[in-house]
Amino acid sequence: MRVLPLAALILLACAGPARAADLTLLDGYDAPGPARFDKVGVVKVGPQRARHVLVLAPGTSAGAGYFLPLARSLVERLPGWQVWAVERRENLLEDHAVLDRVRAGRAPVSALFPYYLGWLGGGVAEHFTPPTDAETAPARGWGMRVAVEDLRRVVRAARRGRRTVVLGGHSLGGTITTAYASWDFGGRAGARDLAGLVFIDGGSSRVAPDAAQARDELAALQTGSPFNDLVGLGLPWAAGVFAAAGSTLALAAPGERATFQDWPLAPAALKPPVPVTNAAEFGYAIDTETGPANLALVQAHLGGLEPAGDPRGWSDAGGRASLRRVARAVSGIDRVDGFAWYHPRRLSLDAGAVAGGVANPAQRVLGVRATHRVKLPVYAYETSLGKGRVLAAARALARRGHVRRVTLVDRSARDAHCDPIFDDPGRNDFVRTVVPFLRGL
Image 1 (cartoon, helix red, strand yellow):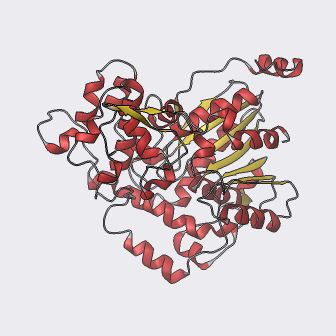
Image 2 (spheres, helix red, strand yellow):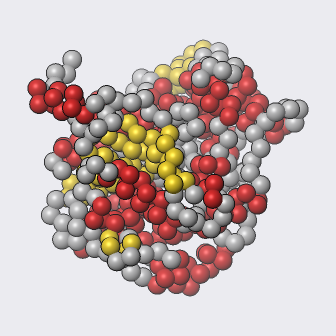
């Protein structure tokens, strides 16, 4: 058992009790479209009266839920700190009705698959209904300015009571972190709100599209769905629903035969070669050895299929993250899961124009205002997906701002993209290296 020093125990006592994590909605940026979307969510983990807050921005097609097990691991090691996971406005389009009831035990597990996926084959009376084109039209404008302005509301709330705020992000969340810190808020840099930056396999290089490319891509966004389609089925919500339903089944009925595997519309790449349980179906899709290449953004080193059984179960042996920990992160909590079912294409387009906070022609086309030098301590962690780009971007950002305190962690030969988020804390190099950085602030 780890024994805390007396000073740490005093800090914990002064910080007050930790609350159960739940979603808080804040008033967001007044963007074009219905006012009901002008909200940004946060899930707070850690003691209520913490003097320091780490705000974490999720990546492409990610929601606040996937940070929650990591957030708990961090606050256990950082007395006096709280972690706020950001839930972007696009997640207001999601339908969590049956997910929430199943997680709370108010609906049977058997209700989950028919409601979210089985209805596509017909014969299901009550089911999930994707939003209409009219309802999703405002998302064509949900780019970097909307994300950064919403994030500003979160940072300002975190700063109340003269608290120290560090901003971080995973994957695209790292680009949003750079954008916020270098953003020009009426002549004032976003970095002035912050005490440091944390990049988790994400960031922003100084290479931007030219103005003509930006105009062409902006024009292309005016047709078709405003959202990414990760699994290529023409259903932009499919990856999010697969993840939310699959992870919840893996938690609520881990040993039952996977319904998804027998569903005729299931993508072949997500179907194991032998009959499996719900837990094994979920693990097979997320693990680096068996998950499809187009889902590299959500993969981690888990275990593998059991060598025998009908259906086959899942073993954590040989993995660095337990399947249950990953399933909790993806399934999430009431009203929040670990995926964004609807990720705006405009946000990904604008991300390229951030260019490490250096003004460029594409920024003028897209309305991106990331132009300030950033003079903050920087921590950056790179996995195999970064391929040198993440640490190079962090070095360039620090060099431009003449920052001396820079912590760079290269795990490109060891980690998959989501290992720093999902790995069990005792095997997690991100937790081990970011904690000293944050303590030093």
